[in-house]
Length: 213
Ligand code: GRF
Image 1 (cartoon, rainbow, N blue to C red):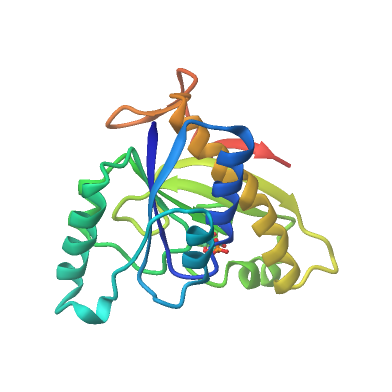
Image 2: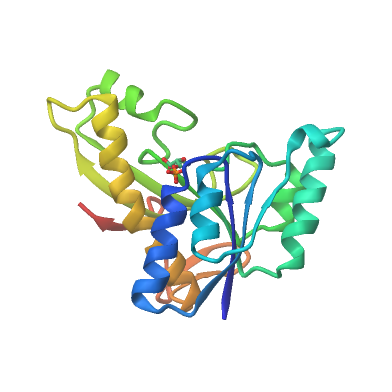
């Protein structure tokens, strides 16, 4: 069984989409643990409802960022995951953590990377009057929101779009994109060779695989 550990900090709508897709399509994918850095994360309730083990590691219980990362890594390792999935996990992970999970640590970001790294992506898209927006799934490296792009889903912005509408529209894309990429990994369609990513035997283009328009 292909095993995931999913890290969240908040709502967990992406987590929900992954739970639902696994159940709906009967994928041979198991979520072994949902871990949050915040006790109040709604996603923890979603996991419990689905019968998935949960855990909270509160950063304030640790003396340093490094100590937290070590605890996080040790905890995750116990579950021997094939893939560690960041789904709205609002912490920057240190070099040693990222290197330890290199090639099996993925994140979803609400923009068409490399455009708009960091926060407030919808606002930035509106301010720049961009015609296209979307979501990206990428491998996590030490370069924040800068790791190799695996896949993207795009939308065309409408004149009446607001930050709220874009957030909702991008979320809808994310809920298709993230489960799809996880499924690709689980069946060996998407492969990390240690240096590059291949999709069905071909090198993934620099902007990733485009899944929807
Ligand atoms: C998503 O927009 C994702 O792109 C970003 O954090 C948000 C998490 O949303 N990394 P949710 O908690 O899955 O609803």
